[in-house]
Length: 129
Image (cartoon, rainbow, N blue to C red; front, side, top):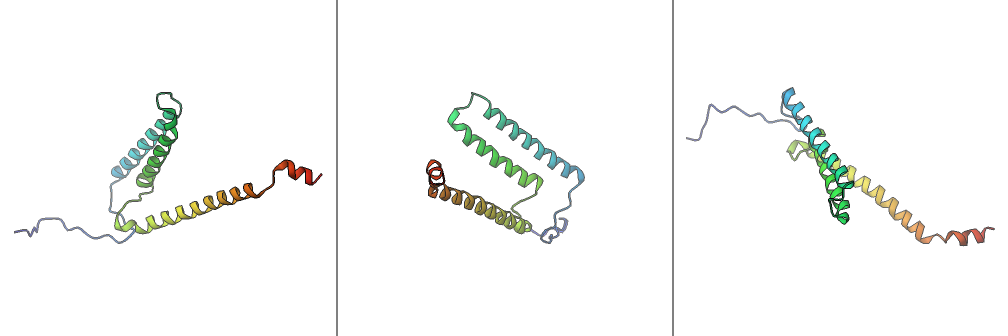
């Protein structure tokens, strides 16, 4: 009834292995990624240099376009997907982002406290002259 003997047998892939794609399919994926990246870049430059967009919304639009471009790069060029075989790649990416946020956040935090706790420059000059 539901037994199909004529269906092709699908083989499982080991973690980290990709299904075999033809050269044309791979090139098409890269070309689509390049096209989307160029479109997002051109849109960012258009939004930043035009008066057609409400001025206070420009930073938000640029942030959204930047996040979309990061997604395009992750999917089309770095091949980060949600498949079970990409768990290590996603975890490595998340760990890298954590480290970057810790370093940048810590730097901003330290600089803010230094700025708050330093005496004004004119007082510093009077003390040492």
